[in-house]
Length: 291
Image (spheres, rainbow, N blue to C red):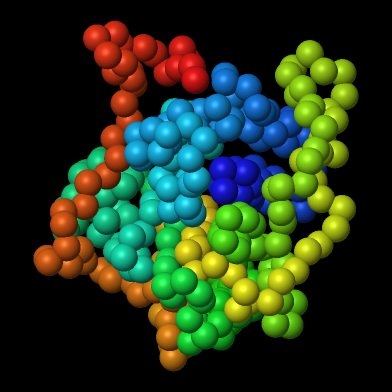
């Protein structure tokens, strides 16, 4: 699941810096280097695993879709290049008030004075059944992939797909063909590549797949997370309008959109960047974290 989270986040970076017609330029190389298996790469396996301890996950423990995205959200606080605002909408609800608070670090009914939009990576963790996918959600998943790729959906190049898989086998779902989901499988062995600045030529073949894999929609594990990328506030408003009219009109909608934080829910607390990590009686700067 760690690799699936990396792929989803990398796709958001591609949308932000390269668009759909991506080219192999300096930004592309920089994206790849952020995911190298080195402790000094911000989104490396090393950093994800160590930050996972803040979510109660020891090194080597299984991460679910929600956990890996919570960890990536925390790491993104140190990302001065992409400057993503990653909002994870819990309880199957996108609460616009909470999302606005994620930008400003304050919770308020009105946008605070220091409110400033940043490129939004909206993640919605879902549990669509107990042990198996509830059949009532199959159509909503299929329609979601179809209409969110439609040109009618705010030019919805912003749909990032979903991470999940089958039991003990994480996958990144990127499309739909008939009754089957198209996915990328991170379990295939790849040659390790050093992408440091000193390399004469970018060797990126192991970061791409030459084949498409698929599986029936109803075979997936019920625990998933779907994700959207909204470059601007106009994109997000258009997404909300379209989702209300089309996606949420399904018999069993995947999620709902709320303007205000429900009074009966626990208070929403935006995650605040910690510039120094406390380790025992010592304070270690981020760059010196080790496994």
